[in-house]
Length: 176
Image (tube, rainbow, N blue to C red; front, side, top):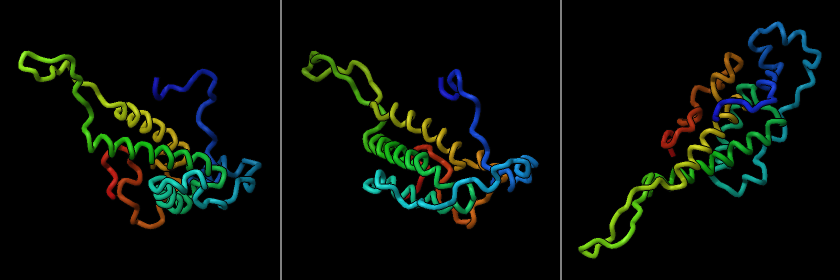
């Protein structure tokens, strides 16, 4: 069931100390690991997504904004890489659906006039793929702090010119 954590999960991950400090939380002052959080380094495009232009473009779009919002560290590299790869897969599925529609006719047999008989309509497999990728992206957005609700009041995008569709993973919301 989507949105329901499996048995044994212990809730959301800890909020980084820098985010707590930006919120003015008392907890930021009591944590012993105040300076032990990872540095912002090594955030260049990883090799596993460098070959995919859509994923690499998403990486280049997100990293500066997340660093400016102070919600991204080098330990987030794998999660951000996963986000960019899944974004690319969802974009490819959405492009297929834009080109071909969401469903196709299923034919069975020949009618009296010699024409094929349509038995029904089925959705393309890309419909389910797109929905699944969108669910995965939603979870990764929350983990990485891409959603405003995840960032809360911790950080703001440095420049007021965030790209269109930056916070929205719904199909067709992103401008090229």
